[in-house]
Image (cartoon, rainbow, N blue to C red):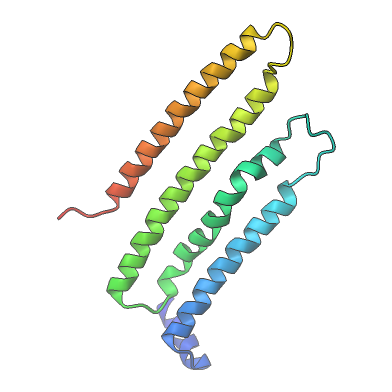
Length: 166
């Protein structure tokens, strides 16, 4: 792969910094394109705003995390063909890895919010006898907080595991 990249650089007479900018731009464009396609396929204009829509909830909660996740993912994939010194390549790889871990944790937290939207829709507290619904909502809040603390703890552990021991 490196040979093809070197040949391409010689053919186009590109400086390494220009090649790196092209790779970064391609990662951002690919990530934006995937996010746009996801938005086009998921976003549904539902006339009845009172009803639960999985796609609307999915896009509302997961749209922003995917905006960052896809470009980072493509940058991680395209990083080996960038023309960088070895120490900078290693640091960039480590930073991208940490950012991917954080954005994936963000996606998991937002997925919990999508599930919460569905459960809140199913257990409506607007009816007269709503003791069961309020009980479920309270348990849901507690479970949601526990899951978020668990995800954040695992994320911190995963980020710390990326650092090598001295």
